[in-house]
Image 1 (cartoon, rainbow, N blue to C red):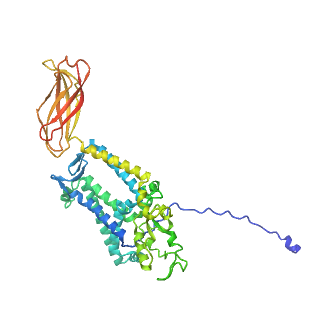
Image 2: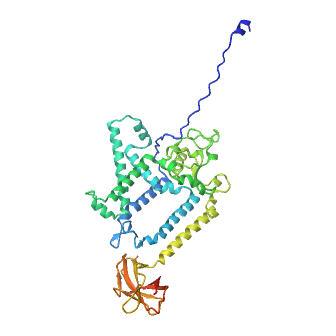
Image 3: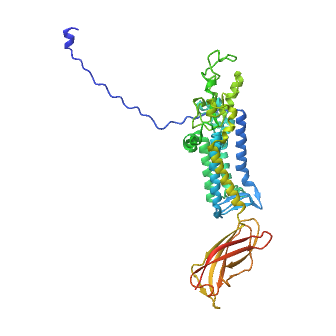
Length: 478
């Protein structure tokens, strides 16, 4: 290098620090267009959807002894389930029901994964119904994609308006039916022409309808992926013997397209032709070939479409199938899956579930037809009558929990010469009646010295169905 070049100063600018890349914590929603599929599991899903909706929509219309057979009467605090009436004092049965539902879900999840989500969950059921409406009005997946890419036109507006109208109408029907479980649905129907519902009925009809439309039509799979807690803690109940939907990578890889009739092994390919149909039919938009994912709801749509593709290319079915992780890894043959039901976790959950159900059923079968509650008159603990007897006053709450009239007699025991005075010698209690009876109990002073004395009220039935109920209380002496 020449001396002149050496004398030229070289200016070196310091490198600018890289600006940190901003990563959004929110991913914009991309609408999923599930393709319709037919197959064994699709038919099972349709069957479960129809069964659940038959129960939901038809049950409020059933009648029992002149009243709605199933009614959650919040105003009068009575829950009717055919011939059974549940009172606020019976909420232990509600606790038992919730426990049974929880452990039933635990048992089912441990055995067969998220079958509840895929076949009977209300979110899944209503989302599927909304997809049926969408498919019926707009067409299958390709037609819906094409329609949404088009600019707004009279045709597109008409199709979209028809779809939205049907979805809103269905949502309103679900809201109306839900309220019919709590308010007699025939009364709601009579009020429908004039829209003369009560304020709470009006609120809940539109509230439930609005959320049905929002969750099942607008949010859809986002509820299962981001809002449902079950999707997050389900893995706690999974183990290697849980029946799940799995892709057989040993058979399928390496994946790749090929002409019909091509020998996959000779071409160095697996049986998966990478058609991506399993992704197109998935209602949550996942690729089951990436392995088990918490978003998977176990609907088995990918199994149906993969079996259909395997039939077309001449390969055996079951590339995607229900199996267990252990069976897929070759730890035991798939024929031994049923024998794995006897593992400790399943047995424990099942025993707890059986214990809860048996306890609740036994308690219900032994439930007395009458509920009795003794209430002391604390305004006047004891008074002396004109004939020198000591007297305490009580109120007796009698609740007839049956659909039959009860004829009753009251008596009291516990002190010498004690007696009970009531306005009537015999009490007639209509079906499901709740009455408060005022009574007086008298005893001689020598039988009831100063202090509190234990006594027992006896309620005896008069008639064919004889029963006797005893309730403890106290008598205040002089």
